[in-house]
Length: 227
Image 1 (cartoon, rainbow, N blue to C red):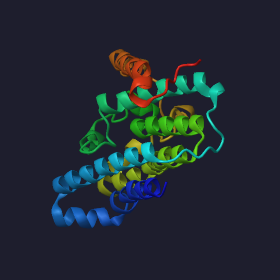
Image 2 (spheres, helix red, strand yellow; image 1 turned 90 degrees about the vertical axis):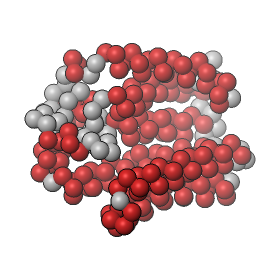
Image 3 (spheres, rainbow, N blue to C red; image 1 turned 60 degrees about the vertical axis):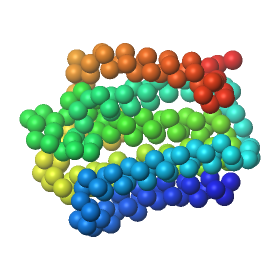
Image 4 (cartoon, rainbow, N blue to C red; image 1 turned 135 degrees about the vertical axis):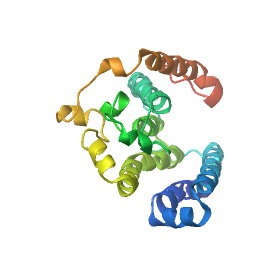
């Protein structure tokens, strides 16, 4: 369990104290943006591999146990998580790396951005929270909790960096979008435009979701399907 804790601290630490702090700007000034991104990507990959390996090796310490009654709800939430993640990687995103140029567009908040400006982190938050609640053991609390912490703290950190770099363009974008899904629409700062989403993205999310749902038992040793 100690190894898992250290891996979680390392993974969250590099994001909070390097990528999410003033140290990032200093490192970028020293090595350049491209090299920094490359080094940080490698460090993040190492963190994920370390976390995953330590999680598999950790002893089982039950807290609230497997919540079998949560299975059906968990499957539905995971489908939503997959939709967010697929849209994050297939739709233009001003909050993504090198996405700042999109803030210059006449209407930078389109499609999924009308719903949330951080679709990837929303997907990760749903994924980690769902698995944390269902599994109910100490190792899962640490493992999925590490991702949940980053997914909840990440949007504010990203917003702060984008505002510092892009100024008025970012403020214009942030004024019509929200971190919490649909919040800007509920507040009347934006509108839901189904046609902008692209049904092929929804179809792709369904296909990828079905693939992982079918192979989950083989890949991870347990089937998420309701018994």
